[in-house]
Amino acid sequence: MASVVIIEDDAHIRELAVRSLARSGHVVWAAGSGLEGLQSVIDNSPDVVVLDLGLPDVDGSDVLKMVRGVSQVPVIIATARDDDAEIVRLLDAGADEYVVKPFSGAELEARVRALVRRIDAGNSDSRLIVGRLVIDLRARTVTLDDEVLTLNRKEFDLLACLAARADEVVTRQELYAEVWRQPYGGADKTIDVHVSWLRRKLGETAAEPRYLQTVRGVGMKLVDPG
Image (cartoon, rainbow, N blue to C red; front, side, top):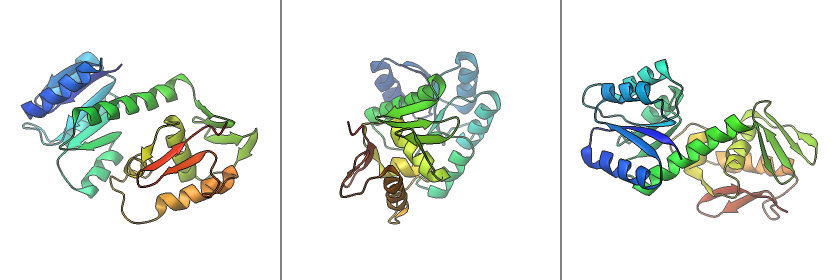
């Protein structure tokens, strides 16, 4: 379980977030303004920060800069702003994840849990192992059956993202956000093209998948083919 600071001025949303996270066993501190939230981050050294953008005293983007000035804590942006360019800018400025309002308590808890799991995986062991596939996050190398695979940067990032959540379906929108740092899916074939390249290097095809499983209409998952 994680310790979480929630910085949110809407009392209803704040209470929903606190209740949902606490019910799942997380330790939660809540603040209704940017400066109060920043002080809570300094005082409590949380594992995750959930940061609203529309705060009454300081804009959330400025709070993000202040947080980054004192801590590398993972930050989930919570926003009602339906502005792709703004979310991309915040991800580039140091946010690690985002969630768009209105969101459910279950969705927020799932994002906190997934983010903590990714951080823990990177801290505890630099390697992700799925079947005979070994991904070294620090060295940025991949081996399959002890053979080194040559992957470009995005192929590696995509494979690592899926491996960090092995056996779990990762939605296309999540892949765009985590790998391409874009908060939208769109109709382009970026993910499909990279998956096709990965399949070729993993020695499989869409018709006969082994590691990369497509969940039609939802996303992808990486599995141990056994």
